[in-house]
Structures are given as C-alpha cells and as structure tokens.
Image (cartoon, rainbow, N blue to C red; front, top):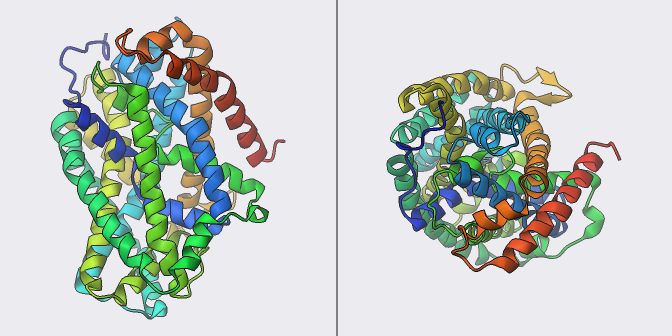
Length: 454
Ligand code: PHE
C-alpha cells in the first residue's frame, strides 16, 4: 500500500539535527515579524502573558502529541492519522485540513519572506538607511504595491525553498537548519544589545514587560492563542511530519520543551530588539504588519556600523523564514511522495506550482487585488486569519481529543517513554491530564469566544 512502506524513508540523522530542524520550523517570521506587531497592537505585556499561557498549556502538549503520532506511524500527516485511528473513522480529515492550512499559510508567508529577501538588497544598496521615516515608509509602500515585484520576490522565495527541499530530509532540511540556526541566534543577540543601549530603551522594555490588563480585548485572546499555534508550527501536521523523521531514541517531551523555550526566547529577543528602538525613535508600537520594515531601517540608520547591521538583520530574518517554510512545504511534499508514489522532485514542483497560483492572490493584495475582499479582508489577511485563528486551533483541538481520548493512555505511555526506556512516568501523567482536560477546554472556550459564539 502506498505510504506504508518505511524501508527507504529519509529521516533526521542526529539528535541535534532533530532539535535544529524542529526549532528551524518553529522560529520564523512569526517571531520577528508577527510577534512584535501583534504584541504592539494588542497592548504589550498583557498580551505577552496570555501568549505565554497559551504556549505552555496548549502549544506544548499539542506539539508533543503531534511528534509522538508522527514517529509512531512514520508517515505523512494524513496517513499517520489514518493509520493510527480505529478502522474506518475519518480522523485523516484532520490531516487533510492541515494540508489546506499549510497552503494558506505558505501563500502569505512567501510574500512576507519575499519582502524580507528584497530588503537584504535594499539594505546592501543603502537607500533605506535613513532616519527619515517618511522615506522608509515610502520605500516599503512602493515595494508592496508593485504587482510585478511582489510576484517576482514570491517566486524567488519559492524557488529557494524548493531547491533545498528536493535535496531531501537529511541532506536538505537537516543540513541547512543545522548551519543556519546558530548564525541566527548570534545575529539576533548583536541586534538586541544595540537596541538596548539606545537612549529611551526603558520605555520599550516597560511596554513589553509591564502588563496593563485593561488593554486586553476579547479579540486579543484568540489572536494570542492563534499566535501560539502559528509560532510552534502546530495544529496542521508539520510536527506530525517532522516527528515521522525523529529518531527512535529521541526524548520527545524534552525535545518539544526545549524547542518551545528556545522559540519563546527568540520572540522575546525580537521584542527587545524592536520595542526600545520604536520608542527611542518616536514610532508607535501598534503600527501593524509594517512595523519591522519601517522601524528597523530607521533604527539602524543612526548607529555605528548600522549599514552592516541592517544587512545582517534581514539576512537573519530570511534565515528564520527559510527554516519555517521548509517545514510548511514538507507537509504536502511528504504526502504526495508517500501517497502517490511521486518522486521528491515531482512532489516539490507540483506543490510549488500550486503555491505560486494560490500565493499570487496574497501577493497582489496590496496592489491589483487590493479592493478584492472577502468577509472584509484582503486575501492576504484572510489566509492569515483563517489559518492561524481557525484552522490551527481546530486542528489542535482534534489532535488533543485524538491523543487523550481515542488513542488512549497506554499507547501514549509507551510512545513517550520510548517503549519504557525513559523513566518519565510523572511527565507522561501530567501530559495526559493537560491533553485530556486543560488544553481542549481552553482551545474551545477561546475559539468560541473569539468567533463571537459565546
Ligand atoms: N512557526 C513558523 C513561524 O513562526 C510558521 C509556521 C507555521 C511554520 C505553521 C510551519 C507551520 O514563522
């Protein structure tokens, strides 16, 4: 049966490789672009606290669940759920919804990544390096409103990730993320140090760390939870797919916890890199999605070695985006390979071709399609909203129900202790309690509340 033969399946080779690849998936534009602007727009520290709670109580258990299922089945996300579910039950639909989500996310993600790639060149040329925010705003607007350049940059990004993906799981994903992730951390720390030493930095830190709960709206709860899902690449099969490449001796609860903590650190570092600078230069923290592209150049323009730093910053962001996009692309590619016996090249070309089509509607939503809206949102915003705030949480809810109530405690204990080799009964018991009672109830309440049902 297609998808059932594991003999020739590629996989991650070392434990460290697993960690970097998984972290490479989690860390991305979510940390450097989304987290700062959402935190800025939703009240700062109070939003951060809700986001933290969602990450620990919902995100972590879902991530552990997905990796465990993937490793058990050693198959793509759809096949995994079909294999592990009781005969004839349609649990594979959760995997199918995930594949849809991966498409919607890639559609707008590749666009933002395109801006980031374009900004490397703009930074090198030096023409966005100015303390005049009118000029940095104009540069950004002219990029995103150009239909031609929006598409060209999106295609360049798609070609870049396709190039890595066709090389395979160990030689493509693992090798790339292992080289790039340490560089990303190094660069981020340099930028943070610079931002913290600006006059007025304290105000930015207060915004990020001093909560004011009056600013927390009902929408903010759903947005914070959606961000937790998006950030950890969960609720849509990425972590199932990556779990299927994990080693048998990988300690899954430990790996997931490390990834969660490292990812959180990157978000907070990105916040520390950006908010002090926002306040120091008199910007508004709630500028929205353009925050990164307008504020950062202005900040770098006024410091020694600013030109070099600006180039490094956009290189660092494109590294982060690359690791995340590899994992997004891997979901449909693994499915097509396993299920339809396609070669990796065929599966990648088909996926990327479809993505170029779907993605163009997002790419053009600041220009040609700016007036084309559904539910009052452009395609770009709609894809983001539907995936982060609906599909991922719903996917996560079903994963919790499946693991906690369908698959059952005995299987979970065996899988998480590596068939008894790890002595982690306490951790497994805590995990089961959260995945059965806490996480699904929280997801349901926040989801229904955010959508205005309760
Ligand atoms: N976690 C990635 C980020 O923060 C985005 C992502 C979402 C990747 C879902 C894979 C799956 O940028």
